[in-house]
Length: 121
Image 1 (tube, rainbow, N blue to C red):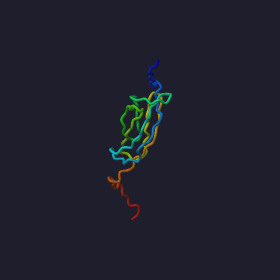
Image 2: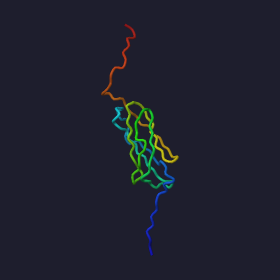
Image 3: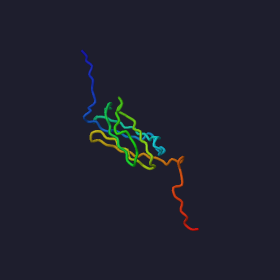
Image 4: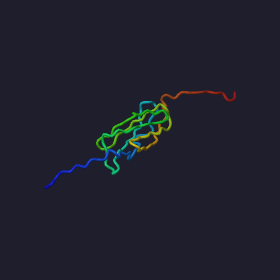
């Protein structure tokens, strides 16, 4: 006698297992994106698909406020900005949170002289 048994992951213990920067140093043009990959697992390390992850970014960067994991428990986060510098990207689910920094570089195509001062004539 044999029976098939299916084990399911424990969604009540969903946590951010990893948050990795996969693309960095994007141009701060509001369109070119830095990307990160978040992985959600249960307390036992089982991948959790279909989970909603909250996402935030600082320093004027733009992200989707929520993303949903695929069957493998991962999802890609795209971050854009019009402000050059470092932005912290934070992914959260339940009480589990991880943050990583991404860098946006100035757009040399739109460079212009911002100020010109004569110091001594």
